[in-house]
Image 1 (cartoon, helix red, strand yellow):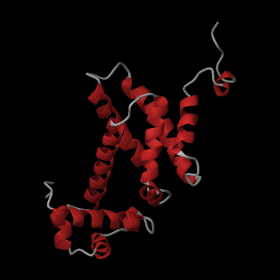
Image 2: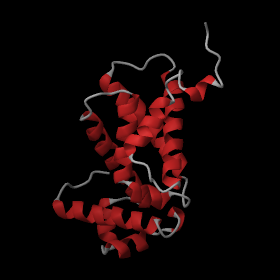
Image 3: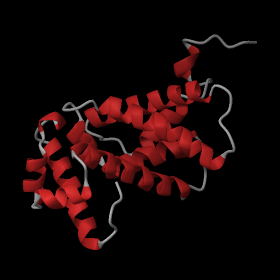
Image 4: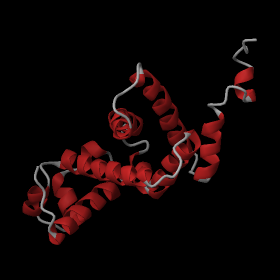
Length: 189
């Protein structure tokens, strides 16, 4: 859908997205209607349909905006290693905790995060490299699954740790000399 960049249209879209996030904190995504979104956003249905096709389009619009924001955030990183990438993930998501917590337990948050990440990460990788290496999808999905699970657990436990702490925990898991692994993996001599 071609969207106007006019400031009034932008304000209407923001109010509709914000209303969806607010309503998600109170009820399931499936039970939210376009009429409720319009009432909450204080826009008429005509304004809604000028900007979005349906409520799924609202969610896709918001997720697309999050992807763009994260990509911009990622492009500003000086170092790209496991620790800095993990930290960037948690710094980014800490900013968007209200959205994540509104989905937690009321929707398929894990499925949404996995699906979005599985589509998004290869595209991000290709921005920095000419092609995907052998078995990239398997490797990427392994790492994505770990990050999504850590993110979900962080949210479930109240996001008490700072992003730097979570990044350190995640980075340690990639060190095969870490005591965590030595009980499971025999070192080859």
